[in-house]
Amino acid sequence: MTKDAIIQLKDVDVTFHNKGQTVPAVKHVSLDVNRGDIYGVVGYSGAGKSTLVRVINRLQRPTSGQVIVNGQDILAMKAKDLRQARTKIGMIFQHFNLMNARTIADNVDYPLKGGKLTHAQRKEKVAKLLALVGLSEKANDYPAQLSGGQKQRVAIARALANDPEILISDEATSALDPKTTTAILELLKQLNKDLGLTVVLITHEMEAVKEICNKVAVMEDGEIIERGDLVTIFSEPKQKLTQDFINTATQIDQALDKIYKQANALGLDDHHRLVQLKYVGASTDAPLITELFKRYQVVSNILYGNVEILQDTPLGNLVVVMAGEPDQLDQAWQYCRDAGIQVTQLKPNDSEVA
Amino acid sequence: MKLFAQYFPNAVTMKSDFLQATGETIYMTLFTAIIAGIIGMAIGIGLTVTQSGGILENKVVYNILDKLVNLFRSIPFVILLAVIAPVTRLIVGTAIGTTAAIVPLIIGSAPFYARQIQNALAEVDRGVIEAAEAVGSGPIAIIFRVYLKEGLADIIRSSVLTLISLIDLTAMAGAIGGGGLGNLAINVGYSRFEGDVTILAMLIILVIVFAIQLCGDLLARHVDHNA
Image 1 (cartoon, each protein chain N blue to C red):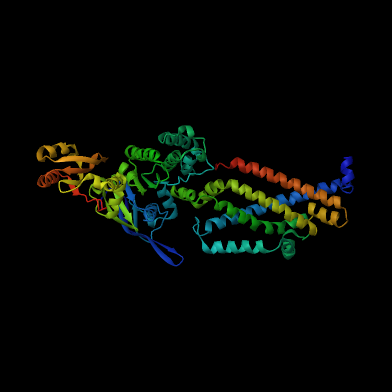
Image 2: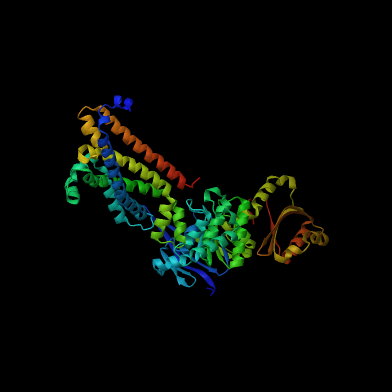
């Protein structure tokens, strides 16, 4: 438990009762989110992610457990204090949840209604927030006139109206096209940097996590099955589900599918081996392929290559056919391993991906 | 005017009766609309917020309101008029006349309006309510700034529907002594075989109904920003 944890969930359980059936949605989850984190919670739909984050601002009351936000016990709060605390926890949603009967400016102004600011101060604040999300010229439009990405920007401006320290993003990019998704994620990242905003980002897309998160938790069946900082999770995923998510994100699954389909054309034997190379950080900079040829006369034919830059750390993934004498190949592999590169021989009949 | 006199031989001599009857119908409708509107709106909001998953979920309150609305909605209006006559006498002092008719009209139309309001508010996206809760809005703020604001177009449409059915009820109340155009159409036109009086009374009611419908549609379209 770090001192700097802005959100602490301790042993949180959420059980739904539905027509005599009890459905555990979240099981014994503990989670610490530090100030300034962009914490990704990944999982398929039904894994309990949304339920879990709704516990943070008590939109969902947990069956048991403890929720501490900013040092305050959220579950012990009276309604009035809870409302006050909620103004410091912004939230954005998959379907934006804007008020159709209000203009864009009025939507952003909504959280400020009934607050301490004067009319003029509110107007100024709304103008500032709209400028921040780049929608100043849309102030007097209605939500129905906006695109999905613009609606989400309005929702972000609304969520920031009361200067929250935390922003919860509940599948906020899931209804958006890839380009808009990237733009929204960029905006979140910028807000994190400029305002020191702590972001909790729920998603079923590892791509989104990869873009901006510094920490990840993977959820399955109401439990967090794996967690850690982004680079570690991406370079050494332990759970099958985590690996699946990452392989989908790096598209290596698709690449291997194609490679396996034409495996016969590769002419694999003991002298020609299909190998996956994975490396983290500095090892990407060394001219590896050339080195292997010079030292061991091993020829590498690159079938697929991908380098992700995660949190300024390069993470490489290569699928190559290495050709050479068997003992030379073994030596080449040892050389790679000594350089901190993970080497896995792939068998086309085996659909598992390392 | 000559042509009018030719087709409405009896009605043409009853100008002041028609004016008075129209006034009475409008008086009954407006007076009832205001009071039944407030009561119906309150019950409709009550039903919405106390229902399962509502912002002030409360099974007991919901069930009481729900059963009450169903009960009064089930009683045919003509029978209701007779049944609550003692109550009317207690409140107004008499069970006959235009003002007396307002009591059963309120009881007859408020539950209907409550249901209409409940249906209108059910159209407000649950996600929007959640978003309002997430920024720290309390129940009162959510009712007035979200439900009533977001549901306004549907509320206007429901109100038009209720107003029109209310005019229908005033005619019925009129027929058994409440005054208004219904009274004129039945007790004068129908009973004395002055068919033209009945027809003219009907036409005036139709004009009122169309006017309400037109205004309501325009207003609803004006506040609706959904598409």
